[in-house]
Image (tube, rainbow over all chains, first blue to last red):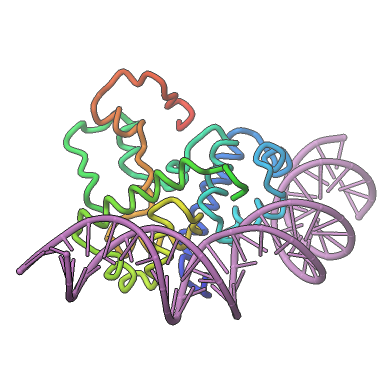
Amino acid sequence: MTAHEGEKILEQTGAAIRRQRLAEGLGLKELARLSGLSISALSLIETGKRDPRLSTLDRIAKSLGTKVSTFFQDPAVDELKAGSTGSGYDLSEFE
Amino acid sequence: MTAHEGEKILEQTGAAIRRQRLAEGLGLKELARLSGLSISALSLIETGKRDPRLSTLDRIAKSLGTKVSTFFQDPAVDELKAGSTGSGYDLSEFE
DNA sequence: CGATTTTTTATCTTAAAGGATAAATTCGGT
DNA sequence: ACCGAATTTATCCTTTAAGATAAAAAATCG
């Protein structure tokens, strides 16, 4: 990461990971044990201060019993979950 | 990545990136110019031989006019879209 | 086929991820 | 406020992502 790039996505993804972890009532220590990552690495990732590798995100996701995709808040998924309108989901357009 | 971990997700994500790039009729050269990544880095990522950072995935996604989440084909979403039985995936973990 | 273009692979260098550890800070509970 | 637990931050070390470049291999086209 070169100073400012990817800032938002690091923070957003870190926050999503933290939400999921807390939702499962886990501490960093437990997640560290489950994922094999260090507590400090997890802390940095969750606070958006580190730029994790894809395999790292995958290890975290698997440890939390979820998939990497859930860390990227996808409005379409929320709509689907809510059993929404049912009308066409246009997944080909983004913002 | 330590030998075998995250193997599948690297290949799957790389393939998704390649699909999206080709769908837009771009070559590695063009995507390299758009994203600021080198052609070799993109080739390695698309063929699942490199473990990209989150910010790298984000740069690629933005260059392709999409979001990182689209690189993770979410079976749950596909099933929901198709209105399937949902056999196999537990969506309650997303509530 | 031969020539051009695209993609892959290799090598080298720099910067950053991630582990280990410890210290500092913050948060809860009593 | 105190104490203990959880989290953050810092330092040191090893590994690896990513840039640059070149060369090899594949695909595309005449």
